[in-house]
Image (cartoon, rainbow, N blue to C red; front, side):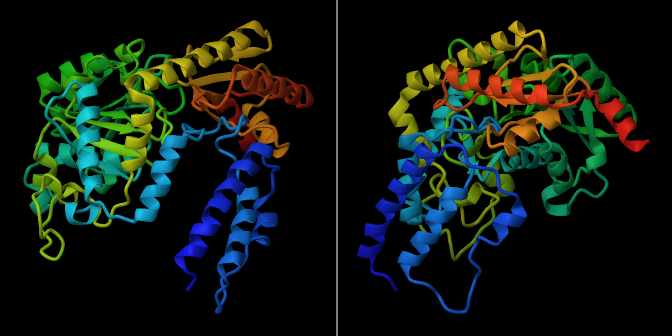
Length: 469
Ligand code: ABU
């Protein structure tokens, strides 16, 4: 076994190498999976020494897409926050597990402090919560609480005879559908409520569907309001949805994985007006708050419900302290990695005010991109952005082909999505390491590539028909 001294010598060198390499070549040349496969060392009967592993890690670093670079616009995360990265590295080396205070020590108290602080931003003075590995699982915990609230017998007896329904907008995240199958509601009983052209759920359509379902013998179980949808970044109108949920006695979950962070900005927090009336909220700090993947929390205003409806006893585990600091008593996981130290470190560094400034700067960059698109007669803005995604297309050019070609030529990573029946480029402006000049460069590349492509249609139905003939 290598001595700890060897590890302590090698680790800083490796970190320095990573940071310098990413600074030198922030955009990695595209390599098809078939080519890369042969470059990854295989697993063998005999092990290697630590220096060999460090050399192989260097090689892997050099081939990894650079998500903090100036040309990464592909996902709802990006950039590197130094304070958060220090917290992440520390947590990894400490190797705690977050089920008990006995094992996690101060980290359990940090988890509670973060939940209290984030809950206060929502408008809750006394709340409960749990960090989960990603927004999909935070949404799952929300759906489990909704099920317990609507069908209290379900935890013990299952969902036999329960005909629950879940409501989300047609732009809602796909985890809502996955989770419907997991909690026993069934995918077929998820109602996709229509939106306006800006991607916001129509409350009248929701009410109409709920009433129709009740007449058909269903029991509405959860309304999911999305606070910043994945493609358009749209905010469902939480206040009217909360009124419907209250009047109809239905659990209201806000999937704010992407958009809850706007609560930190005095300028933009009104996009979430009414969120304090929700029963549960998902909030991903690995998106707008720039904390390394992943860092997601489910917060509920119903204190004690997580423990009551998710907790199980485990004599071998919960041996000291109280449930209050033994977070394993309200998690769907047993072993759970420490996702809180990095967020605590980042929040200590930025403060509430620093985070507000950071988010508002990104919103300014969004306006910069909108201006570029509006000034170019060949480009079409799909919707007026409500958060940190800008959706657009180039007239008569395939959005998919533009994204693929940008990647293949090693110019930028950016994805596409569907907006109002058209395939559009989704440009994500979430990385605080990027500047207006990086976006200017991006649009230059888009224009060059568009000029080299043939005419094409982005109408999703028309493309489907042309492919099927
Ligand atoms: N919540 C998943 C987001 C995936 C994406 O970046 O589009």
